Image 1: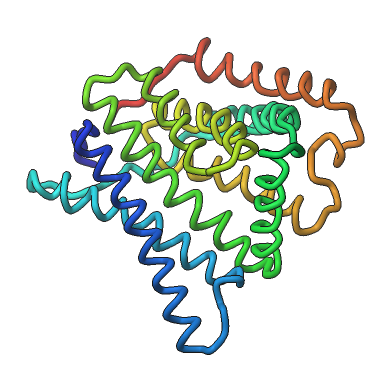
Image 2: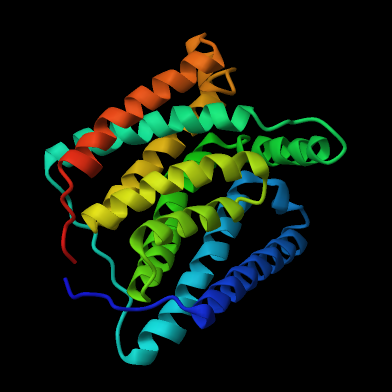
Length: 271
């Protein structure tokens, strides 16, 4: 695997933002065109949302590849290598612990009021549209989202910032923050920020995008199953425990594997 030394500087950052908006615009135009062609508004369907998501997130990746990486005569490549079993035995419990912490944190954000009330209503309505088709939901959240978002936020943005001289911890934090912002609502922002820290740490230490993709898919699969097959909206409701107990469980489950993964066995794989 050849080392990828592409950098994310101000120009590359602007290019990625432009790519995201171009992708969203193309997805909207496709929805309009197909709706007119079929004489039916497909934009309300889960399958269109999955297609729109694919177009929206593939576009900035292609922009970065063609206008940044290929400009220097290189090609955008990522390491998808597997790792020893002990790595999986640490990163999955660590991720699950942070999922519980994120669930607790998200519940602290109000869902009522003049500003957050209508926004939360819109947020739940969008999810309701997606849940009309469980298959489309799984494809979008468990397959497309982990692959495309990890390529963009960890593989391109985080690694590109590190290649550009940003300290690894800052790059992990910034990429997690951006990851939260693009979810465009405070509830997903909180969860995405916290989970993004774990995803960034795992990618930085293992150098394998496959690891963060698997963790991302693990989180989204559990969330999707919770939404599709359960009446519970949170882990505390699912387990029948208080939010405080949920937080304590999350911290304990997270800290133990984190200690062995990031502190005691502080091994960072080479590119």
